[in-house]
Image (tube, rainbow, N blue to C red; front, side, top):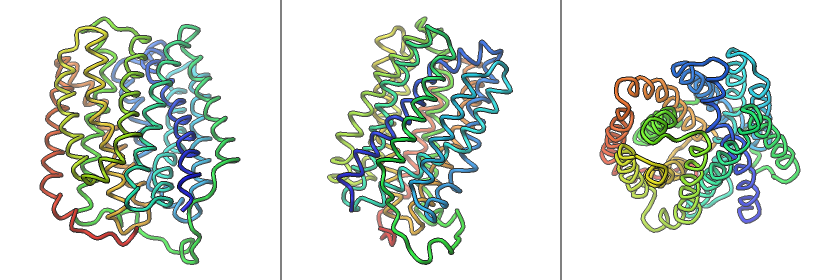
Length: 388
């Protein structure tokens, strides 16, 4: 195991990837609006990216099982950089859509490959900690990314996209130089082809549905919160950037410092359920937002709960699934993307009926996910993984 040297490098890589991703979050709604997008088209712009991830993430996961993690991760990061560059140069709405499609296809390699990399280099006991570190890198990316995006949007709305592109290409160079391959070469691995649905089996399949529901509710919030906060509390793009920064910092602290300890002490299943309870409470509190401070506090409570779910689900999946790590995490990313496809248009539609409706629905969806997991938890915990 090369855990000690590889995990910090992987942390830096995923941090930089998510900084690039985070930079555009507070800016994209206003940038798309300036080019001529209405709220429905903005929802579709977010959804089309996820549609590409839905289709291609399992494929990249399988490819990484066959040819290795490093080359696939490099393809994903290069794709992200190219996508941001095209978005920065966009003058018409179709160009934004084209950039989001290219970015979705190629960058869908990033998260499943990073999670598979962690599964390759960690023991079962430390798997939760490793997945938490990826989550923390994501969270810290959201600390700095949206703040940078908000600040540089003062120059022009395209500036953050150029910055994000530059960040991605710097990350690509770092991966090439510093990251070692984690996948052990096996004689049969390049020849055997298995169905991407191999991981979707028995009680393990509940983890995919949990991820789908959590992703669905989160993306509904992401798509509508800028409008919600503007109407309820008069917040602008810069203030939103700071709110996402505070939420990301809280989430990163919990994932980097607590997920490993909590999963080791109580097990992934208990951490997933605890995360869902806190997440549901956070959703409910968002309805009470009336100024910058309440928006920051309530969104952070939601972020703390939501943030521990994904690394714990990923950790449990790679322990219980009999499929390759890349195939399992690729399919998980696909379900995550399905939630992100349905979530923004659904959130926008609910918001158009009543501005608090996306968050009430979020509470209901989270409770459904909690109950679903509760029913299957005994069977899931009884499975002995053959793929450790």
